[in-house]
Image 1 (cartoon, rainbow, N blue to C red):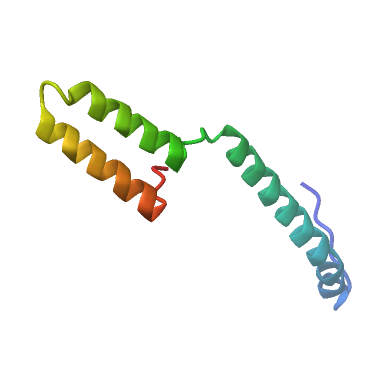
Image 2: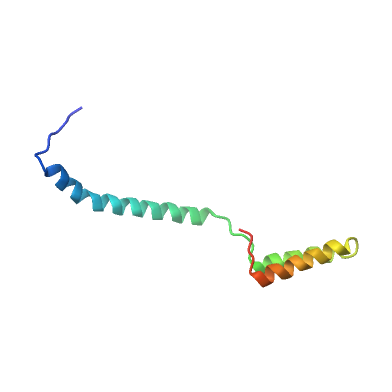
Length: 87
């Protein structure tokens, strides 16, 4: 292993020159990782789609379990009103 001795004050000068480049490289790397994370994330159903699913379920349960169907319709109306999205 080789070791180099820098003249006094030169190490600080070298660190001052390299620090902005290092910070910029790290920031670019973080942004790249974030973009990969966003690309891999599966989209969740939006409010209109989730509401439609709840209403379809309510229709299917209406004949056998009217109380449950009513609960599903209430959940659909609340999701639509509150802008709820299940992420």
